[in-house]
Length: 272
Image (cartoon, rainbow, N blue to C red):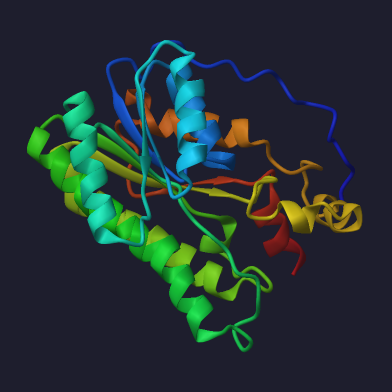
């Protein structure tokens, strides 16, 4: 449908040095993929990072990479679907770095399948991680930021599935749509405290969640042919957009979504 621009129009993305200096950021699901890219981007911009992930070895590895940028890093094993893990994560952040300024709700999972075929246990697990876990993090972080009285930033990693149902991603689409509304509620309730809450909605990038599916060159070619930009996003490009929303440059932006999809959403609406 669209011409491929895979090797064109890809400028080098340069971190804004020190834009996040003296900030402490908690990134969930930071051991892999988009979360790792966000943690490293934040580190390049001067933030201290709490690398939270269910995979302890991955969290330790990314924390070591973060420290190479000359900033502090604390790896934590966190299952966001467990409220006690989340509350301990926020407390550990304060104990280690004194304050918490930025939350990135990135931890997530996906079980592919239609609504009619979705098993109840898969539905429950998907919503527990992708929506309820984000709620636990938002509530715990929001309370800490309010207590500090210095404002804060919350960025939630949604999806174009937050806005338009994705085929064979029924539970995922519902969870991400719920995440978008939760972000808006947080924005409304916390704006008076100087705390912003926004959602970034990527069309997708190759990560551990979809690597096996997209390893099929035929599947990848069909997908990229439907993207006006001609390719999937790079995780570093998503991280750059998240860094903007985490910075003081976005101080007056809250309760909204940033669609990061190479034109996919608008073309899907146009061609349906």
